[in-house]
Image 1 (spheres, protein in one colour):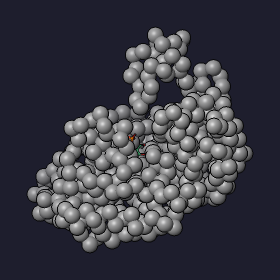
Image 2: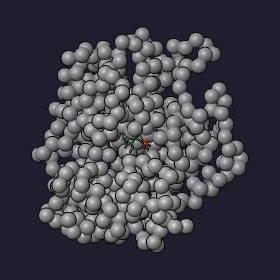
Image 3: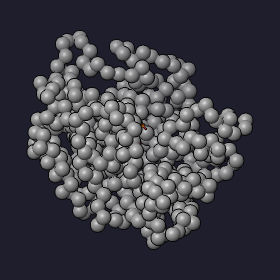
Image 4: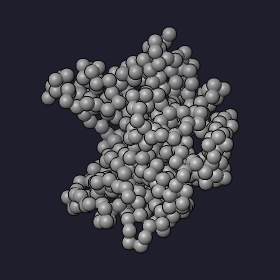
Length: 438
Ligand SMILES: Cc1ncc(COP(=O)(O)O)c(C=O)c1O
């Protein structure tokens, strides 16, 4: 097959510079472990676990075989008022690692669907309690909650919002948690807990009883790994509790071991009412998202509906698809059998030290990190994002895949990455970043 603009034209690619890409495509044709190969046969290290999904490494035969077997056994079951066993099994496995009273999972097909479902769960919960007047949602600057209309409404990223005018009303954004004085701080910064008072200000301005929920990523991943400052999430929890506001953690990136424990909630010791998840749920091998809720949220919605009635008028044709559930179960088994969350925790210091050692490069303006997740800020070039995009391409050319958002590179390799591979990745990062010196 010829990889030319002609043959690539028909696929409108997501979040991509389509015209530029099709002139000069970067196509991955094979992947195994931490390695990818492009269509020229070049080897590339996967420094971002794809898009933070492939925690157990690429090409896991256990997952492929489980999906294959599931499709041969039962390829599809209508998920409304009908079921198939593997969704219940996967929900049991997931709730075994969620915080204690989060025991119910709704299945979706992506992080974006998980977010929009979580918004609807919040609405349904308040309505069931006779508090349907809670129509306001709180989010945060620099938040990324996917691309569906609910998630875009919560978005704190201008490029993801400005084209799309008709989003959900009544969303207000707290300030983001990046602070100048916290540059080059690994782990949770000491300073910044007071930024949680923005939620209190919304309570004081709009009335706590008008606010349905506060959505936050415990670590804002897509905008470059902004780790919640010490005390920040605790304070959000307090304000939510005092005002009947649901606290939702978007764990789409943090979930399934990225921080060395199952969820960010456990890493930071704060339990939300609802958590969204996706990505590493299936090791990226099948599309899947999930929304896990506290017993109280589930029970309130269940008990408000008449006996025998549908309690929540929401669901997807592919909710809990057998292939996705099979991939999810096989993935959870790998995490357990290989103790991969522990491995992420053990490897974290080495990984963070190696990435933070890049701070002497003159165009590196900040580095942040926690667990197996780091963000590297690059001084912008002619316009925001221009240099980041060039660096991302050059990194690929030099043998490493890194997800960039604007001028922030997010380095988050699979948990199975060996020390030598971390060294190799950081050497490629250094060489490449030095090519872009001012
Ligand atoms: C925190 C967060 N929420 C939601 C999403 C959306 O997930 P998806 O791309 O699977 O729709 C992402 C994707 O990167 C994310 O990082």
